[in-house]
Image (cartoon, rainbow, N blue to C red; front, side, top):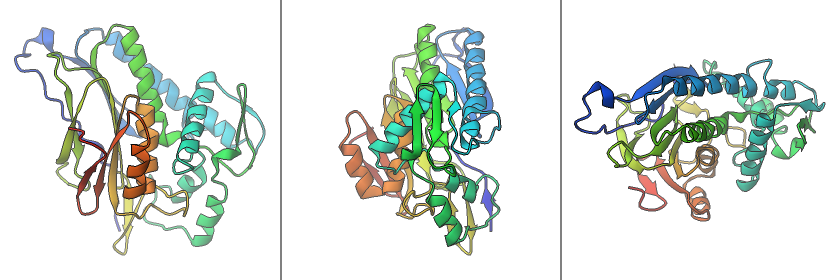
Length: 323
């Protein structure tokens, strides 16, 4: 029985040849937020205050929407016992987007998955598999339709329901950071929030950024394929990110909202390519839950969204030629 630390999407940045002088070096900042290491790299401006502002925003958002921080908006909603809770406009906006993707995916992505998330507790769980009765009880409170929003007030119709924005928050935050940097004249940058990569423009020489998709469970973190990214988002969800094993059975953190158990559908990871990171965040989870065939059909029904599916046999399936 082994509890492994998460392994995140490997980012390959092919730097511009000849940029050895200090004046052409990018600026960057790294920190730990949202249970992952994040890095923001700016290639065309030397203003470190922009990085400081970005990380201040990440700190603010984490304190505002984390379900594990007692004073956050989400914790106050979850602990209100079904009473109306007044929250910030930003939280309302994020919740409305989360509900819209819950509806779009028919609950494959469900923002009220918190009862199941807390039950399995993959961050701290040394290998305890919940009982069927516990899973059934938690699952009975998972239904995004229990969220009622009226102006700046949120109410949960089911007092035992609870919100978990972990499946969409990083995408929303990445998009917000990109908007801020663009407004401040940045035209070449990478925002890396763990499994969420969002590029601004191109590399300084005008060529696309090359984003490597990690081979799941590879101890050397080798890539299995890569994609070109210009002013776009690359988001991966995978069973290898957080899991534990019991008696050779692997239990991972992507939970099936139909069964309450980790998804069991022959997939190891799903990568979503889109313009906005919030789209990739929600849909990577949803498509993993749907499985290869249903997930592929779903992606093909959407405009301006592509996907890469990797199976347990390490076969790579593309919704179209993404390279």
